[in-house]
Image (tube, rainbow, N blue to C red):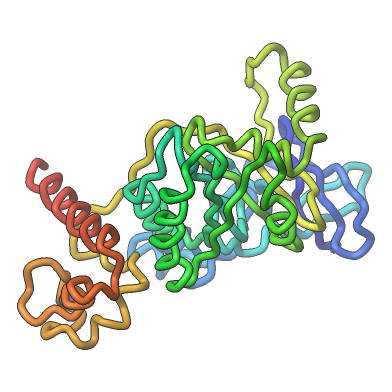
Length: 318
Ligand code: ZN
C-alpha cells in the first residue's frame, strides 16, 4: 500500500501526489464512499451524537482534496483505499487538512471592520483553522488612519495572530508574505472588493491564467463538473475562494460564545463565577474589568457583548 496526498479532484478523478516519489498518480475511489477512522478530536466526531459516537469508529466519507490517503496500484486502475483522519474539513472550498486561512481585509473601500474581523475569528476558532490577517490597499488610506488601525491591530498580534500589511499593486509587503506558505495548505478568503484577486495575482501571476483556462474548458462559467484543485506555491499549496458578501457564525447558546475568545481565558479564572461567568452582566467579572482597564481592546469586548445579545435574542424567537 502506498501513501499520498490528494491535490486535485476533477469529476471523479483524483490526482494523488505520492509521499515518497512526489510523482502524481491518477486515482479512483472504489464505489461512492470510503471508510475513514474517526479520531476523538476530529470535526466529524463533534457532529456525532453520544450514541453514535459509541457505535462508530469508522464513518463513510468521500475522499477530498487535502486528504492524506493510502492507494493501491497493483491493478490496472489505481484505487484510493483509505483516508487518514482529517484535522479539519471545509465545505467551501471542499478541502480537508487546511493549515491556515489568509483572511484579506482592505484598509479602505470597503472600510476595515472589526465586526467582520471578530466574526471571522469566531468561525476560524470553531473550525479549528489558523487565520493569518492581511490588510490590503494600505496606499489608499491616509497615514494617520492607517497608524490608528495598526495600533488597534497590535492587540490581535499580542493575542497570537499574525498581521501583514500589503499594497499588492506596488508589491509592497508581498515578499514578506510569500514566506508563510512553505509546507502548508493555505486558503485565501475575503469579502468581495478587498483586492483578493489583485493580491493573488501579485503572489502568483500564473494562477490567474490557469483558472481562466479551466473555466473556459468547463464551458463559459458553467461549473457543472466538480472541480477542486490546490496550486503549488512556494513549497506549499494555495486554494482560492470566491469573494463573499456576507458571513455569519452559527452558535445556538450564548454561553458558548466565550469558548471562541481565547484572549478572555486568562482572565476568566479571576471571575467571581469562574467558567460559569459569561462576562456580560455578572458581578466580579475579570474580563469586563480588563476591558475597563484597557487591557482588552474596547471594540473586541463591545462586539462580544453585541454578539452575545444577538444569539440570546435569536434563541427567544424559536
Ligand atoms: Zn467574567
